[in-house]
Image 1 (cartoon, rainbow, N blue to C red):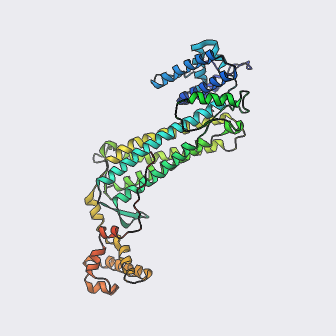
Image 2: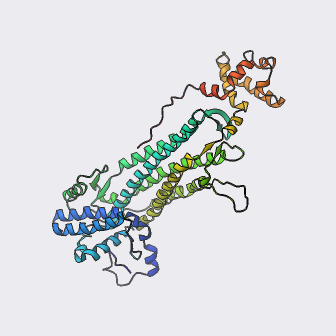
Image 3: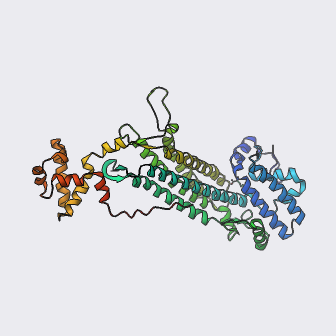
Length: 455
Ligand code: ARG
């Protein structure tokens, strides 16, 4: 069994089952590099205070950097017998530099380390996800550009409503992802990493020892976010708001991915047949030979339960926890990692998926022959002939009803019939108004300023 960071006051050995139950190394190894960064800053602060000699500090940092290099090369294999990542790093240090490593944990606590590590992880993951969103925006643009003059049936209540431009339909999603990206950037900018909280009450090292250490650590490097000495150590070790905020942002992003998936699933069914989905992201049925199932989109839609659940899980864990650190907080890692990994995977695949989508122009054209799609435009035309909108609404409503009851298309009605509904109606007007080009062109309220995606 691996050495622990505690134990002096205990007479009995830890129960094996409890030990297994309490371990977090199987997932918190993901925080290794951030934990090492914390250790390096701390070692420099200890040197500044005189607790470590300059040579000792150098030796510690050299050893920590060697672990960082291993991580960089993908060769870091944490010892699964360790309690957590903090223990693992400490044990490695002891193995490498012997007794000197015992000075490393002076005046610091895992309670302080874990917040620092998790915040830096959120920061890096946020930046990574924001970059993936740039890729997603580019894919959506690519799809829209593939069909520059195409139209799309617009729905409300999942009932045919009005004709829209395909590019507008697609950029509706770009708008959602743009807001997600903006939320992420704000979150990233707002993160402050703190150091020096100790277990909860601060440490006897001076603010200036930490300040100098932070400066020395980041020397020459651009790091947008502040690393500060704490203003309130109790709040600092208790804080998990940043995880909740991050998972809220990811939940909204997940909701957008799920809505996009639902639309594409629906429009790729034989019933709609507007979209042809890229085969390499679909699967077949073991029984029904004809099937091409949209599994990727279904899995994205289905992952929403997991991503929302992760947020609710942490909110529930934190509710009612007394100040300050409680071990309950260990439960924040798995939901955090789960949402981050899920979103990253989804975005990576979605970028490729969207590029492979094909529009079935024939099916869309056929759907656009439905005359009810132009009823609103016809009513608006009458408004410009000085008919009050409520009356125009009524006139066109009756015309549509007449068409349905008598199974005759409006475009096929003689002028004598059309004029019964309103004197301004005739076949020339009907043909001019009831087509997708006119319907879309008649809309002047859209500024068509393109949303910029945050890079
Ligand atoms: N594994 C713990 C967590 O994730 C780290 C902090 C443990 N602190 C302690 N005093 N047991 O929250």
